[in-house]
Length: 325
Image (cartoon, rainbow, N blue to C red):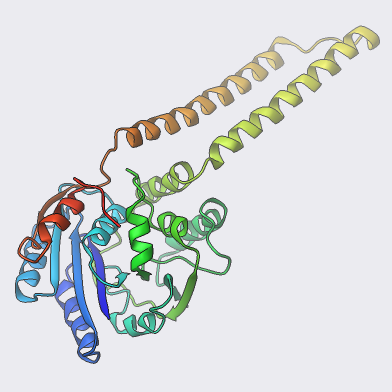
């Protein structure tokens, strides 16, 4: 079996150990071939690119790519998927919280479309766990995540699924949405989650909110439908209130509501309308980006130029051509 391992990189300092541990895993599986695809998501630390470039020089099975700016983990992962050549493609984090020694557990299910690692206990801070729980709830509603599956970036995808994901053009890629648009044949494997060896997560609260908006707006019309439904309910309530006020004034002699109440209602309705325009405007902006065929990432440089078919792969990775298949 030919296994590709895609690893987005951001400020990681443990990449040499990560490669060594992956190599030890495959040393016990001589019948399998493998490659490691590092994608440097424009890490601010200046030694990240030299490190993965050196790893690519010292290890023929390692490929290194660097993006022109920070596009985010999902775009970097998509770049690595385009570069990967394996029959199955794995994705994992760069911080050793995903144990390379668990790779054989995935390969036991190599016939499956999608295999996702399930961590018995995630060693994250409370805020990360809370935001992950909220996002998991919306994952089921928005992208149809199968019940009982907990998403993680430690996963294995078949070549059919990877090719299907690459055929979907979007300037705001969200990897789970691309996966479930292609296949919902999902298996899970239970894994242990290690402590982070160094540094902190690159996912700030702002980045988590940005990813959450990508989930809601780019992968569903849920927000637009909720705003429309809320507007319809509000219009019905306003109409009913008007009828009751007129009925009371004509038949019961009730006084009409004062200016303060009227201003409150006008401000409420005006605020809702402005919010609705904002939601619609956000959809229009993202539709414009899609119509422009805006690339989800751009590659600055790559170490893959010397291998057979590398120029075509590099053009695909740069987003210059539509992937075939």
